[in-house]
Length: 437
Image 1 (cartoon, one colour):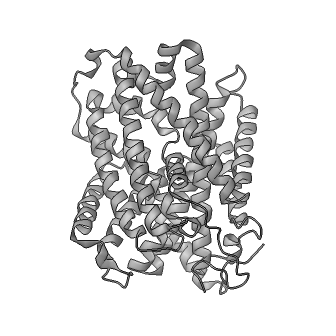
Image 2 (cartoon, one colour):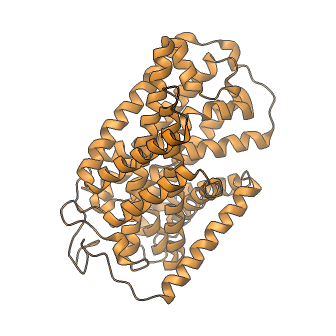
Image 3 (cartoon, helix red, strand yellow):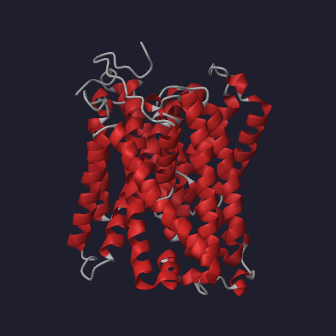
């Protein structure tokens, strides 16, 4: 039976994602709300040296991307990091990574929905009220869940459109801003090494999200060829956009570290109030696109875990016509909307900080283990690939020391939650693979 095919219904995912569509998904997953606020946060930590923080973060992300690309070239089943870690270290480790992946995506969706509502709410006087914010959160949730349930064709089409709508304005801002630079803003200022390390850590989260590309392998036309290409292309595109935007923001704004909406301010300098409002709308669209792709990744991850019999089968059930995970989409979208409206998800947000680093570290270690624990064609990774994975893993371990105490504690709680769920699943009834709905 082909990988991913349900034993009950024989409903398989629809293969539709080619290289360009995968890159659009990747760009939407990475470019969310971070780039619209991080230039200020990074500058507040280390001043003009923030440009070097971007470069160092980009190097680490390239290492993670290469490790994932090598692993993706060896697998054709959905699940991404969950599959890679399961095959390298066993079912328990894979379950933990799958749980952390879903938790990080769920928290990201809640934050993105809330950011979408706040940015759109800023466009009219009464838009910041709690009722308006809740309404905008629900609108965002309904739209992204509806698109995801409509199937991979609708999702990839929306992702492609949103990728253009978010990248083009950022690129134009970067080019136009080159004519407004003040060289004095690039002068270095004193900073602490710990602050620089913290800036790198924050930027790694801004660069992350590309790992979602490895999850819908069974919806890719040629997963072993196209996913590695899309990973590298996405990372390259995002690095160029981020460096350009941060450099221009730093050169244009004298007090970048104290700005609350730096890109909107920069756009206002270039084009006046229309530019400021336009960039605010772009930020909202960017967060909506990232929310959509986060839901795609999390729902497909639940499908993979259900296929392996580690969670109840209905969570991975595919719709008969659109062949998308229906129950998973409604569950994740509903919980994320509730968290966004309640606003009480600070602890979960702290979990996601360490969760993504642990996922990256586990994938690098899985790359090192390929060929040692039965992974197919592990020797194809070669010494160069394993050396890259090793260096990246060491860098990630070093960056983990930049986590705050609250984030470490919350991360430990997240891992403990995954352990409890795994033990409960083992003691519960035997589950089958996903059924048709």
